[in-house]
Image 1 (cartoon, rainbow, N blue to C red):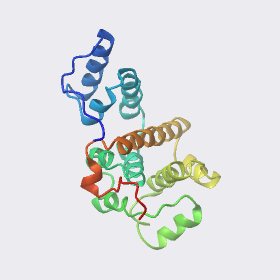
Image 2: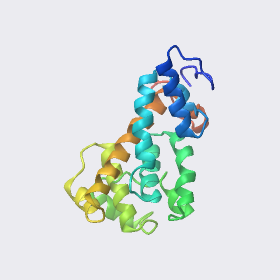
Image 3: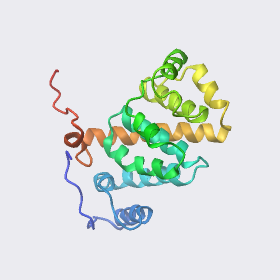
Length: 204
């Protein structure tokens, strides 16, 4: 971690900041995690984060397998291994995808075009995901890698999900791209060393 974590039971400067800590603890079941103890250096940011991510995690209509698949794929693409370690167990617990499919998320080609998706189906991972989950993966890749989602990718997703679900999936991918970039930039959870991520900035 590139900054010190705040204590587990921090003494905040104002009642407002103390209330933020309590709201975060309430959402976490009474205990702060490393991400919280980083965010709480800036209590107003932590407060907004807590509300937004709380809604993404617990107030959408998405099945766990869809939501957590998108989150785990973002984690892989951005090398956000703290995110991966936190969300892979939730994806596994959903019971929808096989252990092989979940592990394949680390190796799946970066596909954001129809031709790439078809090529993958011929090589690796093509039969590990049903059409709905495959559409979510393709959409997640497009949003995360290049931001612009090609029309065929969007239309494929749209064919499987309602308008509400499309907004929820899009919000989930966007939110966890934010989360992953925060985690990686500050090395929350000391994941760089664990997963061999080069943070030196030296040319290879």
